[in-house]
Image (cartoon, rainbow, N blue to C red; front, side, top):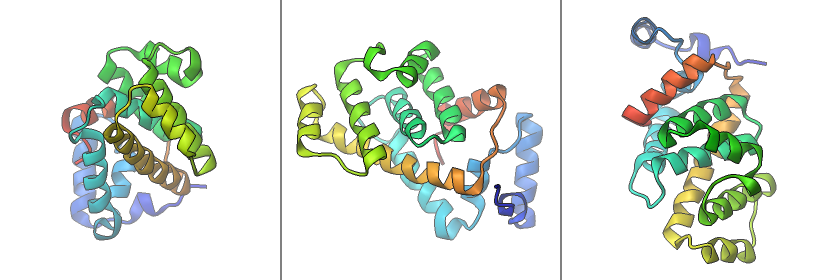
Length: 193
């Protein structure tokens, strides 16, 4: 069930901004953007800053890798909106949609390097079970992933475990494939600001 607040909980200035976005982009404003503008002092401003830093800040992981992590965590959480959004974004970032689809279909046989595979496996376990063991971390580190990369990946996991749950709680509407692709282009050009 969709929480209707995302359709009506805004002042006149924000409503005008949404109308302009619809006109110029020729796509509906995604519910993820609407959520950021709903009570920005409580959630939106903090979430934008945190997510932008996690997804676009300095990291040994590429933007494409982090977008793939977001899609993977969202798939584990069965969050259709976030899977669609971040699958499109990762596919554009890698310039290889087939690679992203392969990871989401079967991580073990997907064409990714061992460090990324081990990291995604660890993020999936953490998302499903709410914990990982020291042996899980040793396995990721032995695959060539640095401690900083583990921290960066865990930050992506935290951001999207939160976002996935909000998307499901608010009942984010699924976009058309064209709208997901347009949103992906925007995220790659401007980030999460």
